[in-house]
Image 1 (cartoon, one colour):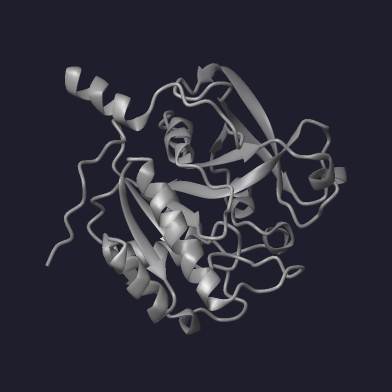
Image 2 (cartoon, one colour):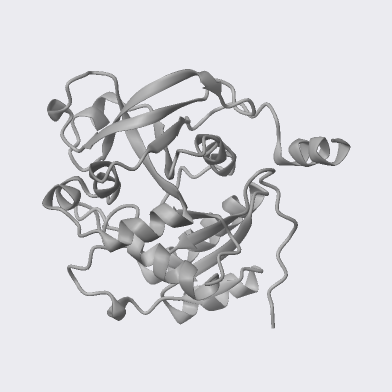
Length: 269
C-alpha cells in the first residue's frame, strides 16, 4: 500500500521532509522531556511543517505512543529503534546525518526525492516558513547542504551550548517571500564565540537539507573530534570541502508570499 502524498509544492525541488524525534544531542543542562511532552512536541512539529505546504512529509518516531498519536493526526510514520545506534555513534550530532540517511534509505531507496530535509521535534520556535526559506539556500546547484541562521541574543553569544556560525553573505541572493531574509555561504561553526575571527556571528538553526549525493558522501566520512566538540556533523562537511549555504531567518519575519500564493503563481504560469 502506497501513501498518497499531496502535490509537491517546492516549484524546483522534490524534497522529502523528515520530522524526527530525539534527533541529535539533547542539552544536558535541562531535564529530559516526559513521554507525553515528547509526543506533543513531535505532533506539533509535524503540523507546523505540514502548514508550509512544501514537499512530502514523513515522521520518524521512536515510541509506539508517538506513532499512534501521529497516525491519528494523519502523519505517515516510520519508527526508529534507538538501540540500533550505539552510544557513541556519530548520528548523535545536531544535524543527525546518519540517522536521517538510515530513515530516508528505508523509505526512498530509489531516489525519488532529490532533497532530504531533517527537522527535530524539540524546536518550540519552529515556523512553517522555515521550509520555504530553506529551499532558497539550495538554489545554486553547487550547494550540497543548506541550513538556516538567526540572530544571537546577548545571553546566547556567551552560551557555549549554542552552536554558532560565521557566514559570507551574497547581496544578490534575496529570499523574496520573506521580508529581510538573505542567503550566504557558511564559513565556520563554533560553540565558543571567542574562537571566531569576527564579531558578525549567528545562531545555527538545527534544520538541515541535503542533496542526496552529498548526504551519501557525508555518512561515508569518519567523524572528527571537532565535530563532536562543536555538536554538528556540518563540521565534517565543511572540513571535506562541501559547500553549505544558509538562509537568514528570525522568529517574527513578515511572509510576503504564502505557499498558497506560490501555488497560484505556478498554476497561472
